[in-house]
Amino acid sequence: MLRDVAFRRFVGKLLPAIAMTATGFAAEAPAADEIVRRSVAVTQADWQEAPAYSFINREVASKHGSTTVKTFEVMMIDGSEYNKLIAINDRPLSAGEDAEEARKLDQEKYKRQHESSRERSRRIAKYRKERDQDHAMMKEMVNAFEFKLAGEEQIDGRDTWALNATPKPGYTPANHETRVLTGMRGKLWVDQATFQWVKVEAQVVKTVSLFGFLARVGPGTRFELEQRPVRDNLWLPVHFNMKVNASALGFISENSSEDDTYRDYRQEPAAAASDAQSTR
Image 1 (cartoon, rainbow, N blue to C red):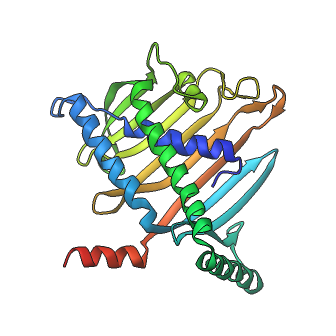
Image 2 (image 1 turned 90 degrees about the vertical axis):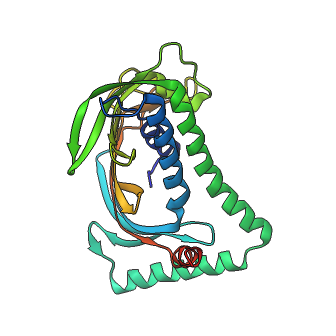
């Protein structure tokens, strides 16, 4: 839940996209194209199943010397996400504050239950469009980066292939959003047993203009994402860290940082019931 909408959308597309294109080259490993194929398949499966889960998100955001810490319960309500505030600066809400957040939640549920078919369709379409944009970026990463084996490492007891990612020579960005890829490099850790990605690091190494002269992202911008298994072969984020060094209109500083943790993933009752029905 990044404060700046443009960077939130950019990061949301970037990190899973980089991770998705991971390839490995160990002696026992399948051919590179087979690893890519399997990685794409499992990432696609995760992407499709993720909306069936609610979770707790602790967010530490810093901008212009000010830091805020908020914790949310993120849940799906009738086809799109809702974030319910449950703590501020790691302090549980007071009885009054909690009652207010419960009122807001009830109000949102009522609103969605009584919205017109057009309003509901537009709300869900907006949510799905953002997710579809993320998926489209994943596919573009295959064209944007080259990967080279850096070695084999263990992360949290899991054997991984560690790979360096660098911009592919001659790559032409598909749109203004993918221009940033030309100035980035990264490193991936891919689980050898499941072809899931365990960790992703990416950083800007040269200044890139995102919207012509309107916005520039410079060196010092860094991202890190970690994932772990939630259920069976479903992997979801447990930690995300971002530092942005950017400017708008050539002089307005947009430097900021954010550190998010995700925990207590729970399958939504409707999704769990659907799973149970499908196994009968």
